[in-house]
Length: 270
Length: 149
Image 1 (cartoon, rainbow over the protein chains, first blue to last red):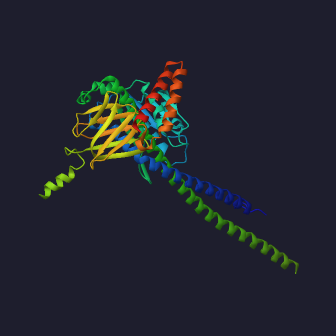
Image 2 (image 1 turned 90 degrees about the horizontal axis):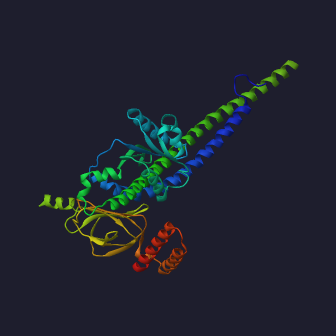
């Protein structure tokens, strides 16, 4: 006789099996993320030196931040990584609410899905197949080639800056366009600068900064996924404990009931 | 006297007239990060030139060639770079960023020569202007690599 309202032994057994499977999956995902994270963190160190060197021209000199902005959102295709993509989406939507974003380039399907409803008219280009393999400099070159094919005054690159294993935050890097740099007097304190040199310099520097942002995003994402899977594994473990207790109690209750039936049946025969 | 010593230590990584801080890196490996060096020679589009402390601020585009770094201790390290940028700021810090960097000692001359021959035959076989330009760039790179080793 199946107890009404209370889960039968079979139901608990099925649920227990599925949670155990989930725990195995999240645990292995955590290990994979941990390995990818170690690699990403190692690659981040030289990328930071490289990115800081590249951005030094814009940091040591004041270039006017133009109004005509092109936003580049760096995320990836894969989820299950905590608040990495949604944090980026939230920060972009807040910016869009203050002052409408007219041009944006999206790197990664997750950001595209989050921003599609509100900002799809301002999408200039989207990149996917991001996140499976570590980003290379060639990817940064492809993205910056797309960026410079459009008109703008400043590029705002939004990404997740890696702080440490348990924290990251959304940040923006501002890179002025070739015209903005040329129009600014500060550039003429540098000797022997002509348009051709400046153009090559700007293109290369843009790729360098994009590369740095891609690496920061990678490290943030892998560490977030590692933490998310760790939490999921722990929660699954707790659930398994609770379910096991419930299973045992139910099993004992079934046995007790059967015993009572047998004994009362035997009594009734006497 | 103590405050002077502190000042000297504080200024150690700024140009002290003898050295300047150099950052020399590619996207995957940072060889120098604000390290004090005496002199750097770079191959640029406007010619091969050397950078000493307090060089006039400038930006330059690198061509494939040798970057020679003269360290504080007097050693000279040579690296082959593929291309990149060099920035010298008013505060005398220098950033040299290259797409590919390899130590001059790591260059395999035989492989470079084989690559040069392949590139030369590619140039003669090329019909499109862009293919010819690509083959010519390959030839330049291999020739300067062989010259470096």
